Length: 167
Image (cartoon, rainbow, N blue to C red; front, top):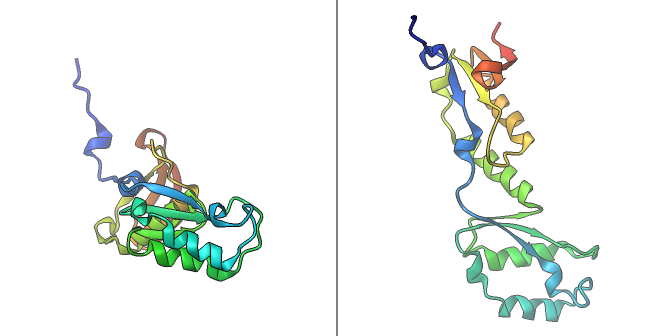
């Protein structure tokens, strides 16, 4: 009987798994409507008092998605002021959703990676993940890999979809 050989494991294919760069730190949402009069009117003095009294230590070493759940018309400085209070504690503050935080963190991470190990190699951009990697991150990663890759495929080695091949 012939020995079963794992050709994928023995190939020169490089796997680029975005899940490897998924933030380990927690992402929390902070709704500023809790500090608005009636949930939708910003009274500056009261707003500032609420911020001064809030325990900001809950946001130590986490990413914060800063948003307002109400359709309040807020001055631009309201979010900026909240971010001033978060700055000593939070790893990063993004005005938006958890997904916006993920995009921002991934963008920052992908900017700092050294892609030279992928020079002239076939790459599989791993498509299946157990974590909620946003679709937009695959676009960012592809743009970073194209200048280095010999080819890029998406998915798994057994069923990869070709995306790019160097001419």
